Amino acid sequence: MQSMRDAVIVGAGPAGSAAAILLARAGWSVALVEKEVFPRRKVCGECVAASNLPLLDDLGIGEAFDALAGPALRKVALMSGERTIEAGLPRPPAGTNHWGRALGRETLDVLLLERARAVGVEVLQPWSVQAIDGGPGDWRCRINAMQQDQSRVLHARVAIDAHGSWEALPSARQVARRTPRPADLLAFKANFRNADLADGLLPVLAFDGGYGGMVVADDGLTTVACCIRRDRLETCRLATPGIRAGEVVETYLQAQCRGVRVALQPATRIGPWLAAGPLNPGVHVDAAGGPFRIGNAAGEAHPIIGEGMSMALQAARLLTHHLLACGRPNGAAMAQQRDVARQYETQWRRQFEPRLLFAAGFAHMAMRPRTTAPLVGLAQAWPGMLTLGARIKTPMRQTPRT
Image 1 (cartoon, one colour):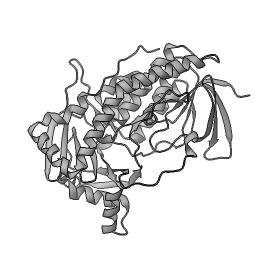
Image 2 (cartoon, helix red, strand yellow):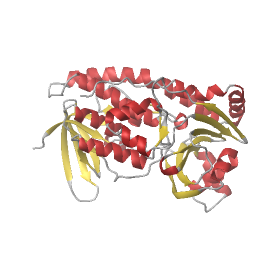
Image 3 (spheres, helix red, strand yellow):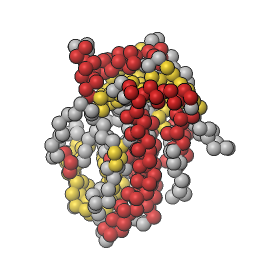
Image 4 (cartoon, one colour):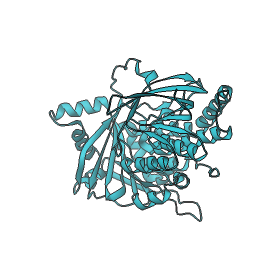
């Protein structure tokens, strides 16, 4: 018979690993299931907002993050057509020097996962979740090894879904894939060396049919990430047959944004473009009795304001705060977990829904020519508009380390 764990967490990205660390450090027995082999590149803007840096310290990776991450992000810019408008990001609180920074996911994910192992988390990697059934107090998670013919069943009182953006849990895999739509947003990312982008500058890219961003991350590499409508990408590919989609996107970005063209003129791309999607922005968290959801499994913002990692880390903190307040779970904890689910959903919506709404409004303005021009004009007259996204981010209240 399989031993009963306090929690099983699906997905070892920032949300899943952070939740695992916080629970294990409080004495919970935790299994963390991840199907990919790390380090892995992933479509992600890679920015970690300043409000998350105290949480990284609390998770035990702050010093390593400081040593590896790119330069402090002190300015934001809007690049559209031939114009670039800059504004200073909000200064850190007095007495701190916490500016946002960027770190590649292949590095950040490893830092968090190794910290999870160090605090006693049982890491199952690479294993794939095949089914989750049962309910609060008695979850059964069937997993298969990715590199050998082996399967296991994990029993846990609490189940947490942190699977990320691009793949559903097994319970949703049987749902027929919806027909691709012209308005679907597909995500792309590439890294460049020797790009001409100022350290500490975080440009937002606005172009016909999409939006994106650039940032200097670790090892001096510049990350370029964007989302583009499916119909716009198909039109571009028809104009340049035989060219890979990522290279088509790169050419289109340079044609649409002078700032990208200038930055990439002396640069060399490192590796191929990555692609993923379509995006599924919106609120996915609920209190209907399934596994708890954190990170993009709980809700996904348009990545134009770089909120993905903030929401992942902060949702992990929010959920684990509620779980730990109830003590270690037991077989009679079904009603208690339902109460936690309701409290968590309410606070999640209060904390994150405004960010999703702001990101959606900004994204839809940025990708439409008839609204991009007024947006750029407003930014020229009022550069402080560009920092509104940073100002609405809610810093996480720190809880005592257990």
